Image 1 (cartoon, helix red, strand yellow):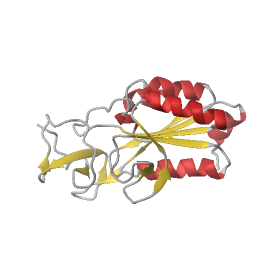
Image 2 (cartoon, helix red, strand yellow):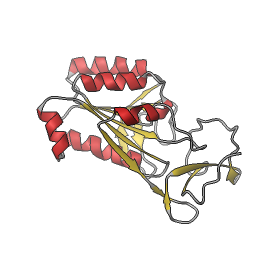
Image 3 (cartoon, one colour):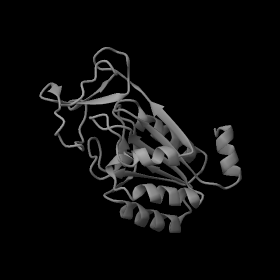
Length: 203
């Protein structure tokens, strides 16, 4: 069911941007899939994209850590998304576009998301707010002021059970060094959700 604010946008045929963000293991993808399925149930035409680099659980589906899955188009760039959207939109008008793990895409994705919303498309996006150094992640930092709706989720700290809003990269059982690569797509064996007190800033 649409919220009051969403109804206003829908009734005036306006698009909007929803950003779901937070650290790893916060349930971002679960919430993302839930929202897209809600639109599907409402008979909206939905299309979803995921970065080709993220093949942890599936190549052609968006998958949460808990195993929830949603069919999607794997893409390597904003150009891929544009081409697929235009092709599919000619077949049947698309109402909702979902983009998972937006931090892994090139920076031009931000302008394209804005363009889609200006065309009356609902765009639902997920992305990590910070990298393992607790620095703002690309694209997400630009989408924060652009989005009409922002939801920041927290996880449970792997060390103490407190609220976690940071992502700790683990290499050989120890926090990764500051010179480790920013992008390293992996699962539980390489990352932990940490709270403010348990997070160890890379050195």
